[in-house]
Length: 82
Image 1: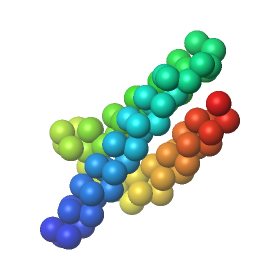
Image 2: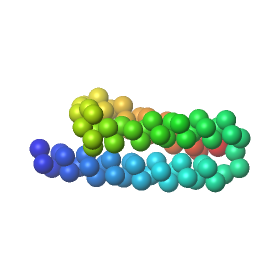
Image 3: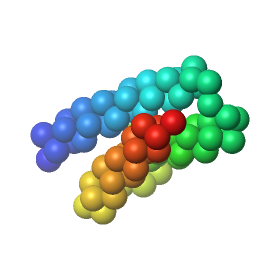
């Protein structure tokens, strides 16, 4: 169980730092305001999930590990298209 928690913490730290990096990258690009708003809002929503687990608002379940990587992949696709 301790190994599981450690892996979850490492995964979330990597995801949070990557999301913040990509959001800052989008802010610096010359893109229309509406597209920036959508990307930043999506990034903030994705950032709330790891912080919610860290602050114990909800527990990590198997569905989190299935859905969250797909959401991250869609976010990356969205930022790549800019």
